[in-house]
Image 1 (tube, rainbow, N blue to C red):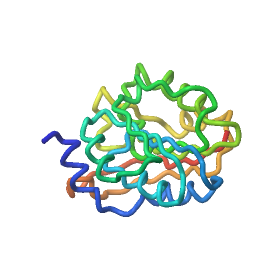
Image 2 (cartoon, helix red, strand yellow; image 1 turned 180 degrees about the vertical axis):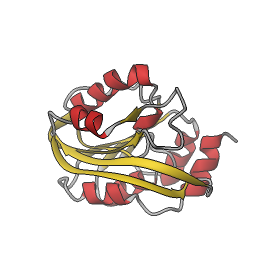
Image 3 (spheres, rainbow, N blue to C red; image 1 turned 90 degrees about the vertical axis):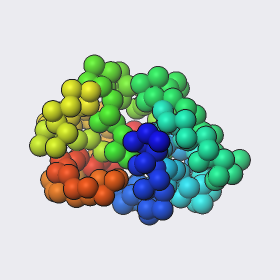
Image 4 (spheres, rainbow, N blue to C red; image 1 turned 60 degrees about the horizontal axis):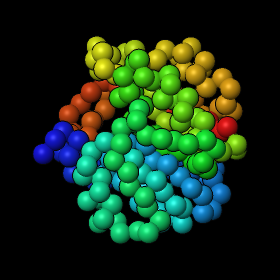
Length: 189
């Protein structure tokens, strides 16, 4: 079992993330949603229960088994990295990227983020997390971290519905404590 398999096993019964719950209230019924790095499909299952259609992408092949267990014709699971996925243009009404985008390598982050935003329909909502420089994982060169000013610059062409910075020690998916430096964002195109 990979670390992500363990993470999915440990989080599959969690409630949907608070940021997601706040953002999903902003979208119309029967929307087309994208769940980026969908993991254990926690938020995906909630979107489906609300009547939305969902494209769920994740690089972990276990996504297909998890999606089969969900058994919804409104779910399209796709094995892909965030960097390689073909997002399209003005395709999605809602994009959900909970604790996902920081795992994009710094050299690929800008182009990937731009492609994600391009795939959002006009008026669409995008909820996501970014990590700050005070995060325990900051020394990982394969991850992307931002300052407050960089976050603001990143979303300057979008309507910011929520931008909240959090610095706290909290549990990870495996239950161990970690110091998090998080930016929670909800933006509208």
